[in-house]
Length: 176
Image 1 (spheres, one colour):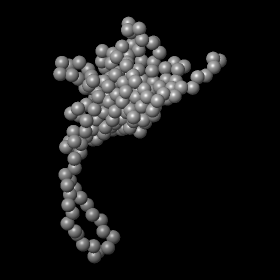
Image 2 (cartoon, rainbow, N blue to C red; image 1 turned 135 degrees about the vertical axis):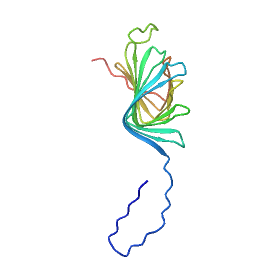
Image 3 (cartoon, rainbow, N blue to C red; image 1 turned 90 degrees about the horizontal axis):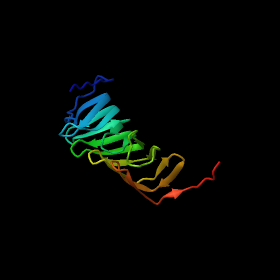
Image 4 (cartoon, one colour; image 1 turned 120 degrees about the vertical axis):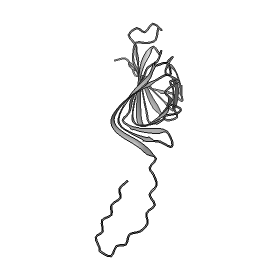
């Protein structure tokens, strides 16, 4: 580490400075990552504008992350947020600053689920990137086709599409 001091007056005195080693072990921009299982199966793909990794906490902070979850689910799952914090050990992710979760049914969908994509928008989301479980304790908006409602909180299993909502608010509009 290099430290430089510039003085406007000639009588300035040098003082002892206590420099501690940084916990940041790397930073990168225009990040593309691929997480795989022990057997080589793709768990998720991630892109971000910037990543800062903290070695002691084994945590990465990502700016504008875009996560595509690959699984045996009948839908393709995408998560986008302003920022994400990912614990590299547990693969728990906290998305903050606003998030959008989209679930688009795959073309070969044989499980009888709707062919309409789902979009969930909210402020914060916490998820397990391995188990593909997510939750939010913040208000959010759920949209599927012309159907829309608001909820105070949310839990979801992204593999089977089992979603739970609390304190749902729906506004019914007459047909045009």
